Image 1 (cartoon, rainbow, N blue to C red):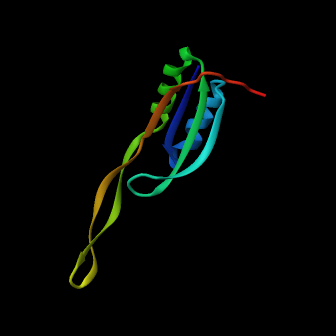
Image 2: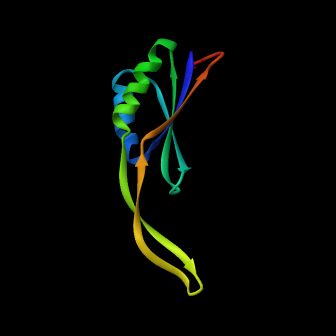
Length: 107
């Protein structure tokens, strides 16, 4: 038995959850914030049989894509905070942790 902790972008979380549920996987959703831009993320906890892990990873990777986004860029100078040209960064995607589970009980 495995526990998959998947941190996905809020933009992708609904689709990822819908696809996992469609394939009959149980998913618990937690709101979270963090990362480079301090943007909203969704943390999904998925209990899975060992043989289902690859399928779950495939679903998450299919529906959690990275994309480019422009963010404001500010620099601090002797004149205070000055805005400059926005910079392009990659956002989205997913971070996965796959953990062994000693015992799984569903009540």
